[in-house]
Length: 183
Picture 1 (cartoon, rainbow, N blue to C red):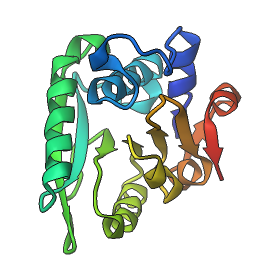
Picture 2 (picture 1 turned 90 degrees about the horizontal axis):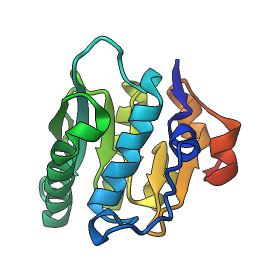
Picture 3 (picture 1 turned 180 degrees about the horizontal axis):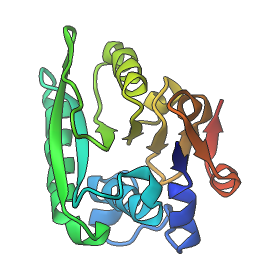
Picture 4 (picture 1 turned 60 degrees about the horizontal axis):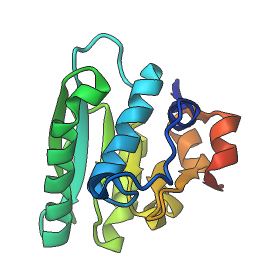
């Protein structure tokens, strides 16, 4: 069972998602989102397999959307640049979505969903649930539509409790107290 203590553990370790820090680590920036995700993964090892020497993050994007592709490329650069923070190598897998479907997430541990057309989010939600993958996003509306965890532009954590249960995950009460929870 996946435990979603990840974000609460990061907060308990002193990570404040509202902290503005340097311009590159501001909430809502690619760097800010990567910092939150990696601190979360570092805090809760149960989220990712213990045996592999690396973690694989799938970046879900719409190849027909220039904005989605730019976001995926930006997140890829930030994840690869932040490998040291996780304490193990990071592999990034670009996962394209189209009206025809999505690739199999072979070897992917968690996914980050970039901004995509609203009509595609339902397909992504079904795909993440079918493969029991924790999903992160910087688009709070996507969390409302069924992704698991998001960060809004102010750095507030958004959690979809129903989505978490759908993939067999559990949240700590500490996280639920600091997050905006959607049922």
